[in-house]
Amino acid sequence: MSLDTLFQQILLTEQQLAEQTQKIKDVKIAIIRCNERIKSVTEQYGKSKEELDEKAQQLSAMRLQYDLAKKYENQMLKQIEELLCQKSHLREHLSKIKRAAKEEEENFLQEISKFNSDFSLKANRETVFKSQTHTVLLDLEKEVESIYKEKELMSCTNSHMSSIAEEKRALLLELQSLNDIDEGFYHIKSKR
Image 1 (tube, rainbow, N blue to C red):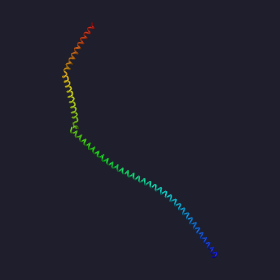
Image 2: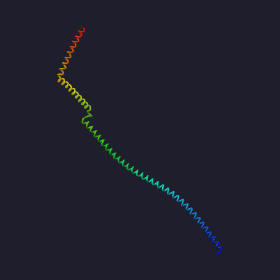
Image 3: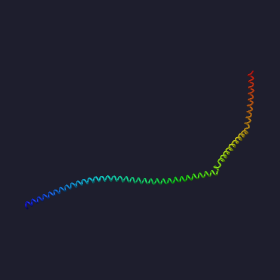
Image 4: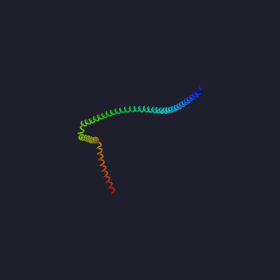
């Protein structure tokens, strides 16, 4: 082999080595860039994962709140339905009571009208009043008459009492006349 050929081969080898070294450098630079991209993407992935976990927790909390709100809404709807049903029953009961009260009032008014017409209270109030007054007066007159009769009966049955009363009157008159005589004597004595 000649020296020129050898030299050319060495130059070619050096050139290839330089090219390969350049390629290795390019590959290393590409690997570094890829590593940086991987690191950047990994960081973004971590951040995205954290954000996603946070949003998942928020979503879970919101779902829980939604479920609770839905249950509360269902309970409120049931209560509203029960209250509306109760209101309906109470209205029916109230209307029954009002009807019964109206019927009772009408019956009462009919009874009063019947009573008034039976006893002619509307038309003959003055007559009834006069009749009652006359009855009271008759009762009072009967009472006075019975008192007089009792008095007469007592005076008749107590004739002994009346004779004693007459005797008492006579004695009082006699006592009076004696007192008068005694006074007369007393005046005469005092004049002497």
